Image (cartoon, rainbow, N blue to C red; front, side, top):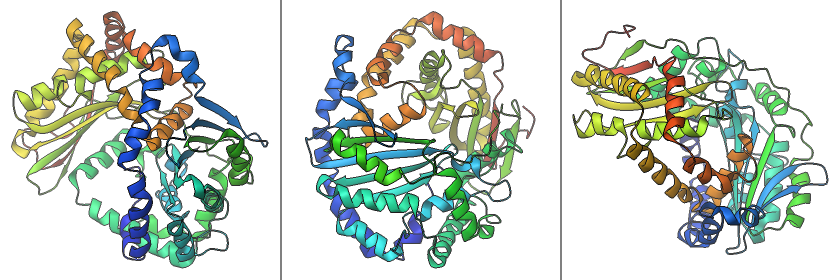
Length: 474
């Protein structure tokens, strides 16, 4: 779970503030945005190759006087501004004995900053219908800002305070800590969460990726205010910052605002090196017994990193395996033919320091063994025989046609631009992405399949009372 567990801690403490936020900006950002971004979709996501040059110019590289860079799509259709930003660091920077540090810290960035305590900070957001939130994933600390363009100045000022001068007041720390602990207690009985945590712990022992992002019931109480302040100081810096902005704001306005918001941050983050890692336990089955009627299954193995030249062919190959909700091989074999599960999926998970293919499902306890045997067999069959030409054509057609759905709101556009920066794909990636998918050939996917077949073993993590399963028995 990437997002910090925030809801329970805040719902009870400040319901009126949150309600006003949801009824204010939330309504404004809903249906009209689908129409407002239609031109962006047509001009960029669905653009033919001939217009690539003109489309790329819609994404402006804005550099502040202080050297801070952001990618901007200036769109005056609606008076809204969406900003997504990330510090490349994340829960992988948590101390080994205090997992949950990044999660707790990000949950507190908007719980008081500068001379504003938590209540005052949230009131300022609500008064102007500004939505500001933060989250932690394994490899990044992210921030999201949504505001009316007329309120961009106070929105940027509150963002500045949050990232530069978080207060970490004792009351707020304890309130959010208790919320995080309550979430951990709930998750302790959630089979799918336990299966995911179990997979990571088995795959990455003694590595940051093996630790739970949200921490543990033992670690979260040990995190002090001083820990949080020190963690923020060393992970929030200018050199690991990526920014994307979409909406009714010009480059001339944005450039100095970048310095105002982020210019006072440390020039360089003080990050602990995270080693590259290959998952362990491949070919084994881990079982955690839980008295529930279904067994939750998480499986995974070795994939490809995002900068691998074969990533796009692997992306297409995975769509045929388990990336499609209705046409993938796993869906057809596991659900349609045998009725073993309601859903089954797989996806490529290129972390900064590990290349993975991951998937999951849930099935009746008595059919769990059958389900994992089938998943293992279908994966190996696809890697051995490769797909048919018709499968490949269908996969490419879907992936090309559905790409525009990633841009049906200003927030989604900003999120995509941010991820493209994080992945270092280039500012023209939106223009060339569909061309890259279209160019994938049967030989390409067979080559990738051969690479993956060099180590096709999967690690399975099961939670429930699975029948027909031998733990650690492969």
